[in-house]
Length: 394
Image (tube, rainbow, N blue to C red; front, side, top):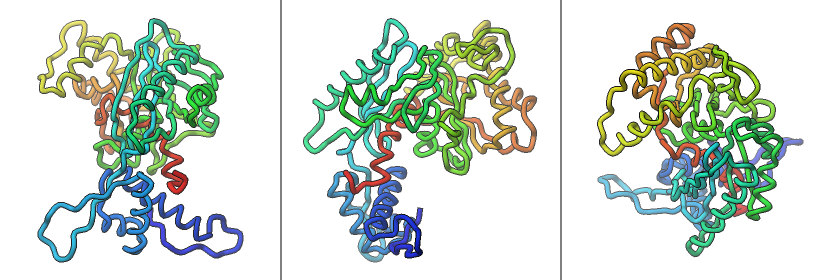
């Protein structure tokens, strides 16, 4: 992300003025602080390739805008004055919205992927687009009323389980929600007066786990999300999100793995007809409780049979993805986190049958590290994108 403080003066080049250079440099510094959550001025200088004085000026401008905060470095034994630590500020916030078949969840997230609050609003029926907008708009109103002086909500990010045309924030098809050609971005923007950016939920989760997850070598990553609304995947290739022509890439839940059950999408034998959350609800609750120190039990009887059968079905889809994309890392989120915890051996054995040895030997299959916050953080990243691209506007 190194951006030099000199402009390219060749004819026909775009973005060569002093203002353009400063905008790119502000963006570079803010993105580094946002993604790393804490960096010293010295580290920012090294990472960007800018001079110390330029870095100082940029950090001070970002701090004046409330986008970053500076604090003294911890006292260490070293020659010279310690470099100040730069962290994301909490004055510019994003709202994250995730509709599911049984609830609409709304959260407020600060820069640096800090989830400040999450409210899950259960619904008696599958929420329509209008239901989702009403619930989200009411939540945005509550959030705004609770802001401190100087705080502002910049935008709303919506993570939807379905095919989302990213540039227009239009849901082309969310079969489990029964949404088709829904202009969710425009609808929610009209209701809140805020910019709204929508994307597929698994793509949002992939962004979150790639940028903020506790993973090594995450530049070639497949994030697979499992929720009440089905299964989807997001592909990170060479550090960038693989979206496809219109943002539709990643529908791993609708790949054929066998079986005769008809899927909501209209096809038969899709992964998400064979791998479902309901039979694994107890194991998921136990796994989440284990974060408080509870020891994991051993599934038995029918529960073990269901778990192993679903693990084998999941391995078919993951094996195909390994063969096609040669990832370094597969991150399982949502209820799919139960498989590394309770059925790792079965998953590993079936992957050995369903994928080629050379790419499989390079892959690690791990649970998501952001837990229930993955989609909240990913949806917020959609809202923060314009701020990161041009901090001088805020």
